[in-house]
Image (cartoon, rainbow, N blue to C red; front, side, top):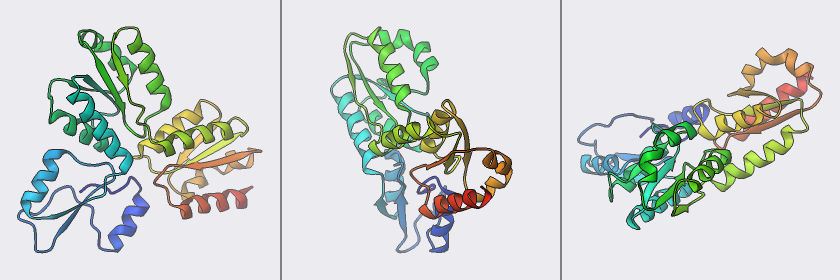
Length: 254
C-alpha cells in the first residue's frame, strides 16, 4: 500500500519480483492476497479497512516509526496536548497522527515549520501541558528551534526526540565531511524526506547537488572537474550499487 520505501530503483526491483505498489485495493480481496504496510506506517482506519476486505496484513512499519506512534499515544493518554513536528501529508506523520487521535481528536496538532508554530502560539499557550514528538527523518535544527520557542511560552513541556538515530548520525557525519569538501553529492530519491533534508543541511555548508542516479552527473561534469575535493553521501533508502555507480562515474570524470 504505497511505496515500501521512497526509492524508485528499489520499487522497480520489487515490481520485477511480483510485489506491486498500489494506491487502492480490490474489495473483496482476491484469494490468498497479502497487503504489506510500508515502512512509513499507515493510519489505523486504513489498516482496519484492509483487514475487513479480507487481505492478510504484513506490517513492515519501521521499528523507529512504531516508537514514535507509541510515544505519541502515551503522551495523549497522559493528558498532554500533542505537537507532531513533520509534514502533514507525509505517510509517516499521517500514521502517527491517526494513532494519537484514537484517544483525543482535539489535542493533536501537526507543525511543519517554525512559522506554523508561531501562528498557533495562542492555541499552544492555552494548554496546561504540551508533549512533542518529531517525524523520524526531520532535521535536528527544527527540533531545537521548536523546543527553544516552546520553552518561552509553555510551563509544562515533555519532549521526545524521536529522530531516527541513523538519520542523526548520517546528518552529523555528512556535515563534518562537507566542511572539508568543495562539493557534496547527495544520492537518493527526491521524494525521500531524510535525503532532501540532508541536501538542505549540506547546501548551507558547501556546494551541494542532489541526484537520484549516476546518469544525472552528466549535467555536472564541469563542476566535478573543477572541484578538488568531492564527498558522497546518501539517504537511508539508497541502495549501495547506486552509491558505487556515482563514485565510479566521478572517478572516471576526474
